Amino acid sequence: MADTDSSLNEYERQRRANIERNNALIRELELAGLSADIGPVSASSNKRLVAHKPRPTAKRAKTIKKEESPAPRRTSARLAGLQAESEAVRIKTEEEYATAQEKAKAERQRVGGDIKFEDIASDALSKLWTFNDDDADSQNEEKVIAGDIVQLRKDLSSLTLFEKFEPNDIKITPERIYNIGFHPSVSKRLVLAGDKIGHLGVWDVDEVKREDEDEYPQLYLFKVHARTLSSFTFAPSVSEKVYTSSYDGSIRSVDFTTGVSSEIYYGGLGGEPDAVSEIHFADQNLLYFSTLEGELGRLDLRTPKDITKFRLHEKKIGGFSLHPSAPHFCATASLDRSMKLWDFRRIKTTRSHELQAKYLTRYDSRLSISCTSWNSDGGIVCNGYDDTINIFNLKESVTWSESFAAPEELKPSVTIRHNCQTGRWVTILRAHWQQYPLDQIQKFVIGNMNRFMDVYTADGIQLARLGDADLVSAVPAACQFHPTKNWIVGGTASGKVCLFS
Image (cartoon, rainbow, N blue to C red):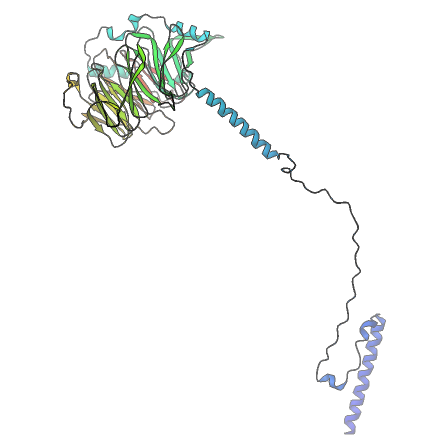
């Protein structure tokens, strides 16, 4: 027991010596604050831990903010009435767009009454008129003996592209050509074309314009309508005037001798005009016209205010044709996918109090029909978006009486597969007969989407495919024969012309 006490005392002495040594070391390190927490531990401290009260933290000195001058605040340009740079640009762009729209609207405004072209234009028109009526009257020209189809195929295939100028140099109109054709003269080659914004372009084929030792095609341009010039024609035996129609609802005449364009008809009095899609003469005075509202109109040039309209379709009439040998017969092509034949010798009033010619018969297509054309032998050709050309042999039609009972539905005698999918930027393809073929072989021409022009007979025999892969760079969608000569002209979406003769 004594040994145990002596060992504890020794242990206690050693422990206290260690404590003293540690305290001395702490004092040397100037950590006197910590040494206060270290003290002798009682025997009971071996049994439990004693919780020490944490030292109070020293209070932070209160910082005093220095008063500084306030920085300039970001102000609202909108509240200040100022425009941001992007806003100013936007407004400027909108103003320029509005100005352009007003200008375009002004250009689309129809000019009523007579239009006197400028002196230079009048002089150009008078220069064009260097032939007489006998030259222009193609119907009085002596006909040749009926030709051989084999020989005709050789003749047409040998037609050559106009060599003096390339098609890219013959820009007859500034915009897309919607229709093209020849003046009926046989002594002077004149090509006329109507474009998307109402221009009438004229190309004097055999004349040349010279500037500084350079030669250019002799082209003339006249602003006749405010919107698309949809068609043009010449009155029989009155070839010093060309008659034009337009989507602006008007029909005008352009006199080559006086340089004056006169308004013959306007269908927009009291409202939005009905766009005129095509015009044809039944005789020297009687003019027929179709509208995009499904009507066919008739006016006499001697009393132009007396206009008769007939309801023939519920949807637009894209084109129509009169029988050349019996002009009281009419064929219409419509968006309603039908071609209908009418007899204008008999008129009736419908239940809706609209006039209508006697309905004869019809042909129904899978898709809309773009055009119809009647030749002097009574044959009809039509084509549309079903990619077919249909030919109807109606030679006996010239003898039809007023009481004639036509078949309920027409059946084509010939059907030709042909790509008519022109899309948005190419003029609709339309087949057109040669009006008065001197070789007495009925034939028509139609544009080809592969940049050619195809020529067929009334029996569907292909006579020629005219084009030039190197020089004809666009589809000659609008194309036409000369009324009597085997000259063929085509017009493109860029306003350029290719002539084969």
